[in-house]
Structures are given as C-alpha cells and as structure tokens.
Length: 273
Image 1 (cartoon, rainbow, N blue to C red):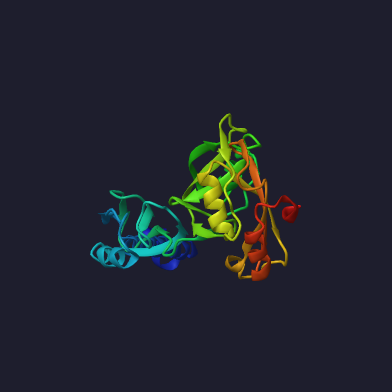
Image 2: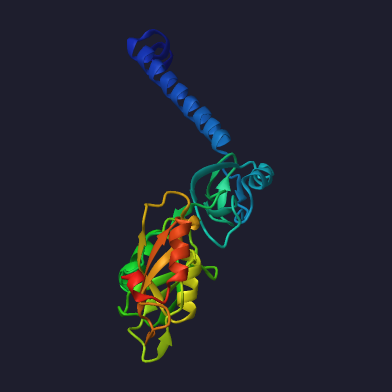
C-alpha cells in the first residue's frame, strides 16, 4: 500500500489525520490563551508606585489615576504626629514595580482623635499608675515629687499644666505629669484656712502651702453641682504648724448657714469636733 492510498483510504490514515488535527487545534488554543493572558495581565507592562504617605485619600486617588492604579483602604490607626486622615503606610511601598490596573493598599491615620477617659490613679503606686496610663494609650511625660505622708503614691496629675480629674476625656497619645509623694517633709508649714472654699480652690491652696487634700466628705452626695459645695470643716485646723505633705481632711456642704457658722467659729475647736 502506497502512502497516497494509506492517507486517503485506510482506517489507520484516517486516525492519524484526526490525531494531527487535534494537535493543531490544541496548539492553536494554547497560543491564543497565552496571548489573551498577556493582554489581561499586561505582561511586560509595569509602573513605579509613587510615594503616597502624607497624602489624603482623594489626593492619592487622583495621583494613581495617572499610573492606571487604584486605592484600597485596609486599616486605620492613630499616629499623633501625623495629620488626621492622611496615609501613614502603603502596600506595596513607594518605588515598587507593579502591573497596571492593580490596587495599592493603604493604612490611614484616623480622621478623629480617640478620646480616652483618664483613669483614677490617686493613692495608687507610681508603678501601677504608670502601667495603667500606658495601657490606655496615654503617656507619662514627667514625675514631680512632693512631700506626702505616703511615699511613692500618686497624689495629683496634671495635663497641659492643669490638674486633671479621673474620668476627664483626653486625646489618645496625650502625655501627663504625675505628682508623686516623697514622704513627709522636714519643713514645717502653717495649715491654711480652707473654710468657705470650693474643693478646687482648697486643693490648689493646700498644694501651694505644701499640703495635700486627704479625705473628702460631703454632707449630701453631689450629683452634677460639686462646684456649689463649700468647705465648712477641716482637720488639722487652720493655723496649726505641721510637717509639709500632711493631709488635710475636708467636709463640704451647700448649706450657707452651716458655712457662715463655721466662719464665725473657725477658731473654736469644739465647733470642729
């Protein structure tokens, strides 16, 4: 049997022709697939990622349009020394080579500062107070030692140079200064007269005189008008000479008659005891 007869008339020739046709079809499909993949993935086409840190998301989107790239925000954090709402990190980083039509993943600085309620740290050891404050995302920027009956206990906290009460909300990342007791001082000072003063004024005057406020007692529990209460009793008594750092216990009331009687009898010991 010659080749022409084999190719056109024999069963074996028919099978061989079908096998060769299948091979041609497979090779053609594979070639077309590779071309389409190259077009879809922009094979050989890449761009350099610009530096987006410090930009706002809108600015980054406008910039990336020139590179045929897109933005995708994946997280937000709070960084104190960065502008709110700006980009603080990008993936992939600047100067990386990527293919067109890809997303650049962004981490933004929060648009609003988180406000943290300041914890109660008075009469807590410095070490515990420091750990608690840091656990809330706040910082201790300094420590001031003052005479106090109880050494190494926190006796006051200041924020931006002002006394701060527990529960006051401050921006996350803020720094405070702790006033810590150093033990009763060797100096002797005169107890100031706190009768008729508000708690805030009494605390400030006590500090100015090298004393601290101890127990605070209200004749009726305060709700939202603590500034209307005034001191009508204190121990130790005003005028006594005692070591610096001694605690002054105070009693407060809104009863004006009680405050007036205390004014009139503030030097009579029996009125206080």
